[in-house]
Length: 94
Ligand code: SF4
Image 1 (tube, helix red, strand yellow):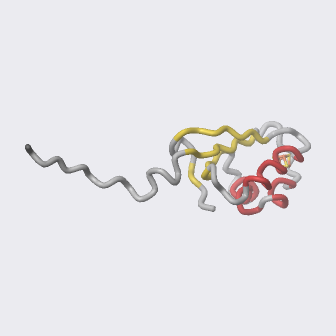
Image 2: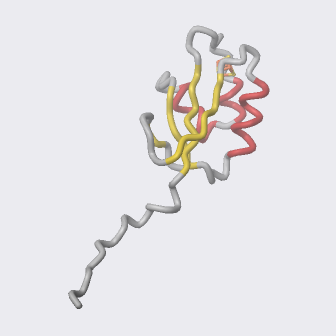
Image 3: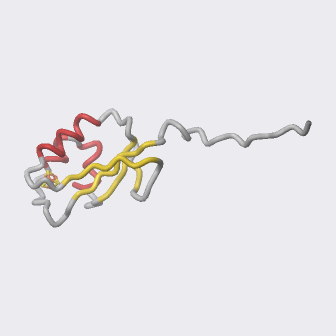
């Protein structure tokens, strides 16, 4: 029998398998920064860089605050989409 070697998986292959993509509609946003004040750790990328799409790990400790920011946005400009695997936006560490 020929021995089979399996290459090691990257260290974060399983821990970051689901990401939340946060999308902000710039055409709806009024710039009030309520989301930034609710969850600065995540929404600073909108408040400081005007990055309208970014990703956070599904298991982020800021999940509740992200939900509050979505609900409290007066313009309903924030959308959260759960995506399998690292995706198209820029990842935000948490
Ligand atoms: S809370 Fe909504 S309207 Fe206010 S800055 Fe954030 S995305 Fe824009």
